[in-house]
Length: 328
Image (cartoon, rainbow, N blue to C red; front, side):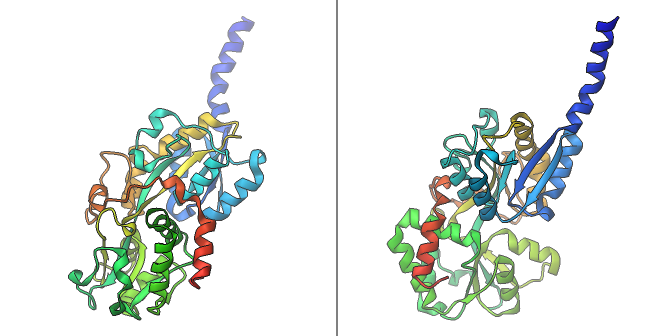
C-alpha cells in the first residue's frame, strides 16, 4: 500500500515539479520583439523563464566575465558575432543535431555550438521621391562615388553596421574596408544613432540613401503607413552589402538545465515562433517552409556572401578600424 501511495505521489507531483523549473535567459533582443515568445513557451511547456534584457555586446561581455558562475542558461543574441565569441571562449555547449539541421548550414555554428533563429539582411534604403532604382549601385562599394556627397546616412555606433564592416574586412581585407570607410566619410555622410533614425530621416527627405537592416522599413510603414516614400535596395548577391546576419541562440556550458534550455531553442525554431519573426518583426524565418513577408525577396535571391558568421566575432578589430578612420 505504501509503495502504491508513493507512486501516486510521484505521478501527481511531476507536473508541479516541471512547472517550478525556471530558465534564466540573457536576451540581446528586446522585450517588445521576443517577450511574447517567451510567454508562449511557458504556456506551452510549463517551464518558467527569468529574462535579463540588454544589448547583445554588453550581455556577451557579462557572460565572459561571469564564466562558469553565470546564472544564465540560454543566450539569445542579436547577431552571430557575439555567439561566435562565446563559442570560441568555450562558454557554449553543443546543440542536438536535429536542432542544428532545422536551418541551413550558413546560419548555424560550424561546430554545432549555436543556431540562427531569424535572418536580417543588410540593404540600402532610399527616398523614392529623390532616387530612382536604376541610379543605385549594384555593390555597396559603389556608394564611394562623389555623386553621393551629402546624400548618405549611416549609424557607425550601431551593432549591425559594425557587423557589416567586420564582414567586409573578412571578405575584402582590412585595407579595402578602410578605403571604403574613408571614402564614405569624405562624402560628408550624416550620422544617426540607429537604423530607425535613418529611416525617419529618409522619410523627411533629409538624406537620399541610408545603410540599414531590411526590416526597419517594414516596421516604419506599419506605424506611418504604406505611403512612406522609402524603399529597400538589395545589392548584388555575394556582395559584402548583401550580408545576412542572424539573431541566434546558444546554451551555456555551465547550465544545469540544459534539457529545458534546448526545449526553448527548439520552440524558437518551431513553426509558431518562426511565423512570429516573419509577421511581427519582419525578419527572415530560417525554418524551411515558413514564408517571409510577401514583399521580401527570398534568401536565395539576396545571396548572402559565403562567410562563416561565427567569424563576425572580431568586433575589437572593427572598432579599431572605425576609430582609425575617424568614423567613430
